[in-house]
Length: 336
Image 1: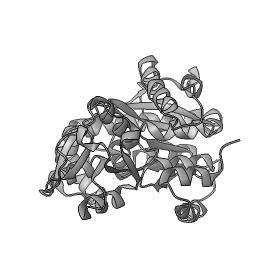
Image 2: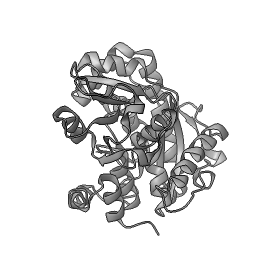
Image 3: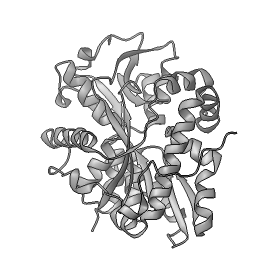
Image 4: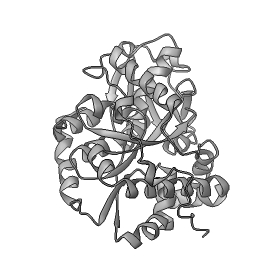
């Protein structure tokens, strides 16, 4: 049995007052049926944004009578909460949210990994302020989304600078609120991911203290264990479609930047930067990916950010042999 929905909401936002908004969202999501796939995504998830725009997943699942329903989330923690509540079937997050969810008792599984270099995340400060490098963060108010990929990024950035989480004053804010807080000076620094990082880096009032190159990790496609077990064909069709969309993105970066601008509202110049440092590979979980994610989970446990250690390998889904692998021919990404 998974953790209560309220627990994930409080984790994601650092305050209980935000829980009703997410509860309202969950009530609006249509219930599951044998003929539906509810797919959670974020606007920063390039492969899924491409897939949604090109409708290739809908085309691939139509012969089986499966209707695809897209559900957008502002960050990974509320998406994992929705998954734990049975409101979505497959979702995309960075490395941190599934660790927090698993530690809280959610029975989720890792389906696939999209590796990242860490260049797509960073910490920013006001240019007119006293902060010039990560070592200057000691004693400062640092904004980031609790339980998000930025949570891991800030831990690693601090570690490289010889600091720890106890050396800063964390301020848990979702992306939009974090941008407002750093702009007004109500926090000293802000940790965020692309394309919002690329957009903020164009702001002449802000400076980048560091990217998260010291924290290469991955984004993940996840599902409730029960859903993946019951619907392996839908899962594999979805993964192949995501891989095809990522392949299209890798070979159409100019068109991709314009497509992402339409999806995110981030200006084209920033999306071009974001796209240029993105990684478009998609693969099933393998030993290196499991080890990397386990290391992050162990870091969270050592920092007492999760109540107990978690076993990543126990949460990795293995597709039945009959479904084939990711390289099996699947829907081709549309050329438009």
